[in-house]
Length: 422
Image (tube, rainbow, N blue to C red; front, side, top):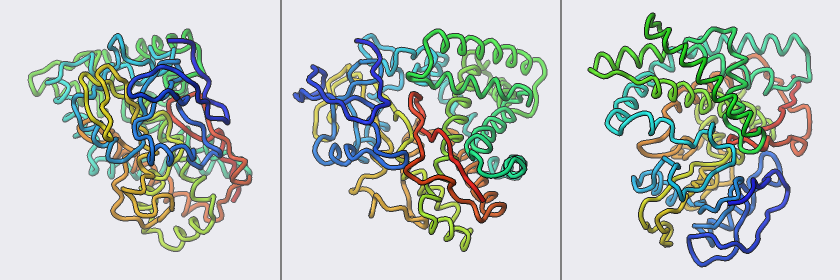
């Protein structure tokens, strides 16, 4: 299996390795690095054209198959033969520190399939567009407060640190019923549990244990004294349906919400602002027509060239994908960002069109296991963009676009900093 492979380089490493499926004898280190922080690797377009099922080597050193075409990614994400659980003996490890990561199938282990579907329905009821709309005034108030603090500190400022990083963890702690005084602890756990190469196994294990201990105590408190929060709602709704929601499932829910909802949205806020300010005419157009905020957020999500690892699946029987037979036992990685730039699926796929509609991008996955929190993410991004347009119309990057730097070593992609002035 080998040692971890550093992917924070500027070169695509290809060498001869025997990795299924197919006859190809060239393997690409994955994730594939980009030439700049906001641009996609040119390799994506080549793979879509000529190698729809590509052999890749993951940061763990294990082999997998990479999908980059829109239709292929949709097919795999909707196909029950491609399983979410990656704990089979021959499944590829995404990283050597995967015990605390997001691909360990913790929810699938915690619940049998029939109870898992009940869980999704209950959580889905919490994340309705109507409920998220009700949260929006509070999210905007949080954003306004953070903008106040950033402006008071003076320009230039790092928008990611000042606004992008604290806002989503505030929202998540609010949803879980966690005291505001514990927000910093949740932010640290989120960062550590999403590590591919940044943290050691000992650090990941310690974060996992600390998070589990804290959340287990929090769950016990909510069982005794339910409140107006997601954990309490799941406990109460399950009891009303004649079920007991296991602590393991509640713990996995809290962890999933944290790692999926904090780091991803925090980084997306920074990337959104960076992408819109990379060409100042985009920002000016939004200032002139605020009705474009909703479609602009969708287009930013589609064009995000740095979303992170992608979605892995493990196949339990032979299947044909992209006219290639993928043998059972293969771990397949669905690269959502590459699929979102597929010229066969989107007209002018590499162009940012702020009014693009329809926009059936795959940023939140696809099928029965698409992201449950996508309505929350959309609400946060739209609220932040509205607040920034209203409060800081003169907002601009404080560095040249090519000076923006990527974050490497985490499952979720982002920018190290987003220096701005106003």
